[in-house]
Image (cartoon, rainbow, N blue to C red):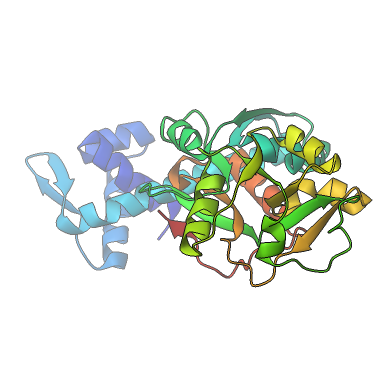
Length: 308
């Protein structure tokens, strides 16, 4: 099975006749007919039904068509990728993520990407998971970076990172030297949390409800920089994964303390996308992003991708 045979089959389907396909391909009609016969011989079934100077797809041809179209699309994308490499990569890459990720984890990833591909323009859109899904479905961009999945047919969520929640405190906090904390230890202190309408809080609420435990958020905001200020000022404990505080934890300004018998759902990061909409720049960034996330205690990448 060759590219020429597949291209000829698709061209006949689109033009509705062998003679018109021959004109579009700038080939003699016998050459077009020969290519189709070779393809049908290889597949062992007739792909076309010929009648009164026109052709239509057989049942087998209809079954084969989407794979032929996908093959041509993939080859076009491959050709485009090679051209980019020959000429020096150019173009515009657009993707989405949330504000917390954009302000903490993303900058060094983009710095290394720009260093490798300085001629690629970037557009980073900061939205919630649901807003990113809307943007992907409306084709404003093709890739989203999110902490949550959703029940969206056709959108793939690929897990790249998973971490338990930790109790994050200032280096001056009495708990800073502890190697672990019980949940009751945590609840003795003032809690710093995201606002009640966030998915983060909804998951915390479900966990505490399941445990029949009450908790009282003392400081609430949707701004991560303000949360960091409250932590550094020893105003309370923030329940989070260390990824968003990696600079402060590494410098010793903050401590991330494991929670004993941790009951909370894992904090996860997913790439979400619609496979059929991706172009060569999207694939390039996704590969770079996955590699950049590897040092951050990555999730088990043997887990299958999920389509929700």
